[in-house]
Amino acid sequence: NSPDVLKKIEYGYKNRMITVFWYMSDVAKGGHTNFARAGGLPPPSSNKGCTQGINVAPKKRKVVVFYSMLPNGEGDPKSLHAGCPVDEGIKLSGNKWVWNKSRLDDE
Image 1 (cartoon, rainbow, N blue to C red):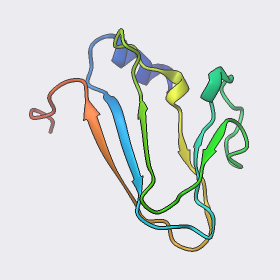
Image 2: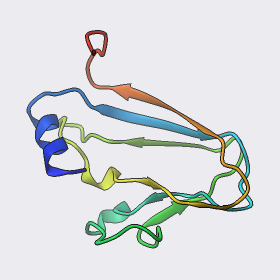
Image 3: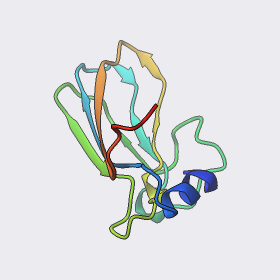
């Protein structure tokens, strides 16, 4: 997360608290979801190759759930994630975000 995003979270703005991400297809090669800061790793200088941290392989019916906020409401920088390029095949996926505050008044 960028410092601006973390600042907004700390001062009570809305944020995704939980992400539920599910894969709806198998991918022949690539298409992983990368968690570059998993295990407390430092921020990557570049995450182009999805080489740092943990890569979750896209497998049909697999579900990944992760928190973007700490219990005290602060943003969790370790939740940094990225979709890696699909090298072969098609990646079908969906997500559901659980927010920490109501979003009914969003524009």
